[in-house]
Length: 299
Image 1 (cartoon, helix red, strand yellow):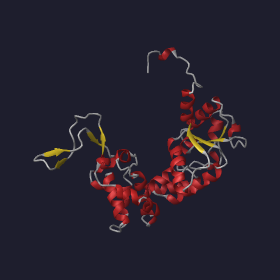
Image 2 (cartoon, helix red, strand yellow):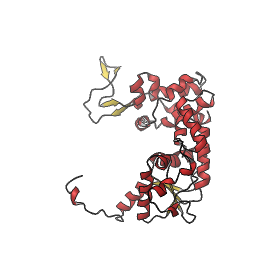
Image 3 (tube, one colour):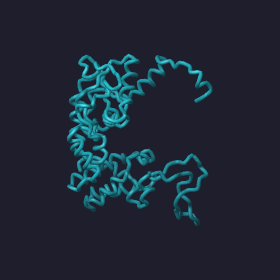
Image 4 (cartoon, helix red, strand yellow):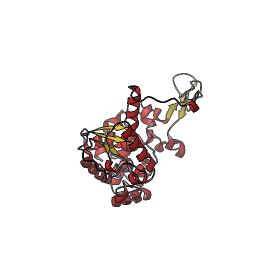
């Protein structure tokens, strides 16, 4: 509940205008949605040129499932008007946290943060987590990843793809590559390709055998105890490095945004996605693309 209380100011900036339910369609002449009987004699159409954009609101139809509804629910929880129960969890967990609502909000309400904090508050109140979330939590408590892959096999992709094994726990490296669970256990070619690319660009990186899940799945669904444990383990492991590189957008986001948010202090290292480095080097003309005659005239 503490995190939700910290966001009280955001909740009270929400004026329930419902703009968060919509997104601009690119067509200003598009017929609006909804009606408003204003000061004129007729009925004015609202949201011209807009589309309904909230996935949960579209899927389930009720106001509670729209972001605007969840803001009212969170506010009512803080004011003691409703209790935290499985009904609140059911509504809160239907949000996919895509962030469309935050992008539309003129008052800059941190809607996704509020929804994640609401989920955490419900679980802290003793409401059982959804079965599938509990299952993943139990798997991760055992092997430190949601796929159930063995800890000792986390860096097996190095040998499998013929990557130089000296990158594993390299004591001289100042830059670490956080591989993430998906690239470690499922899409291993991503990890191998990323390391080969970084090496070719001249980066001396290491991957760590004791890396654990970044915690993103658990921050999202309100399993804060597990998320914090994983975060603390990673912080202790990576704090000695100057820079952490990522190929997974979710892991990158978690380290860059969630870790400082929950530790309440700046990271001791910089974070970058590998493709940010590529983009920077291209803009500096340090990477020059070789012409490919097969692609001539194509975009």
